[in-house]
Image 1 (cartoon, rainbow, N blue to C red):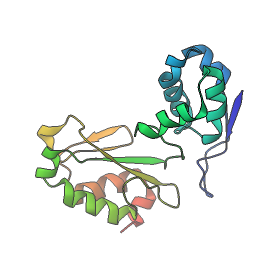
Image 2 (cartoon, rainbow, N blue to C red):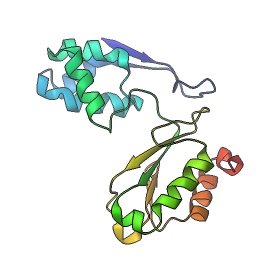
Image 3 (cartoon, rainbow, N blue to C red):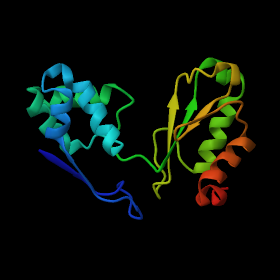
Length: 173
């Protein structure tokens, strides 16, 4: 079983086409129904999301219904069914961060990137996601851009972070 993924779903994508072999992933995590979560994580780790066309193959391999597989994917907010942007921006929405300015920061980020939470920019540059604690409460408000955690983030600091990672960040004002 294989699933083909071409780019990140955005017309100007420079990512190469990827084909994953589900049999290879299944053999590494197991083919029992309790292997569903590790299998979904493995697919998402490889592609950045779980393609909807992979659901029937995953269900068949684990002797589950497609509804059961889809139910798990849609229940857990960590799983995506669409390709993410090149840079994923996560904004802490927990109480400590909110008390230290995360609401205003989130509004600035949404305006700067031109997207709402749960969306990916049209050019595939950014995906914006809310998170409900980054464990960085002493340095609120906190965000994660890619794999990098940033604390005490202001609107100005966010602009610096985005400008440093992308030419588009310098333009998105």
